[in-house]
Image 1: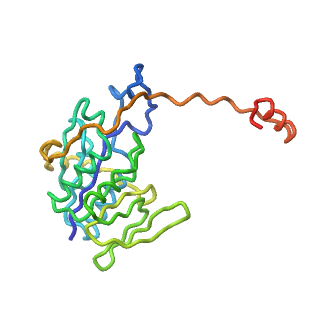
Image 2 (image 1 turned 135 degrees about the vertical axis):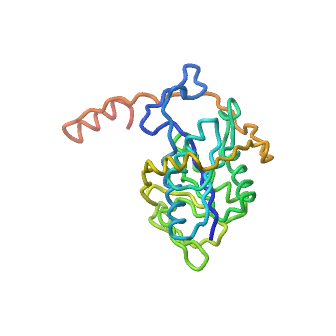
Length: 253
């Protein structure tokens, strides 16, 4: 049976209105509600289902970030994950943490933990990069099945249905492999109170990027973060001729 490593990122909650810092160096995070990245919830659910189907033997949730990231790991543990690894990254180092750094951390942990499957959410809703799964597969030289909407095991391989622009693509990957979860892969379960209580006793190991020999020096520099321009209100026109006149007036045609 497979050992599964699943990534869980702590992000600003999807229902919160994002506000930019006055100095335009980033977004306001202090005092703002955070939760597990929604796509990572789907990844955790899929890992738990693999265990329920007797495909996975153990699930390890990994989160990179400050001390509060342990809350995100506990949420995963309450959903059915066996244990957690908290890669502690704080302060300015965390603010410049990029997918390349996370990929290197996961590649190292995948080897250290002898993982057979690494599952990520397809993207995080804060930076929207959708890069970590692909780069982790590249660093490990493992096959990748990203944007998965269905995962099944056949003859020691995984058969993965992927959502692509033109429809659906079905691929087979040999283990070990990297998967990223798309929106329609599953419906994540709610953690029950008994499982939340059990999660408090499950182990979380703490490490740092330095322990894993991963350099987290920033590869990019953020020059400015700005809110998108306010959209102008639309207007109704009675017919096509009036529309053409209006477009000409505004210099669009």
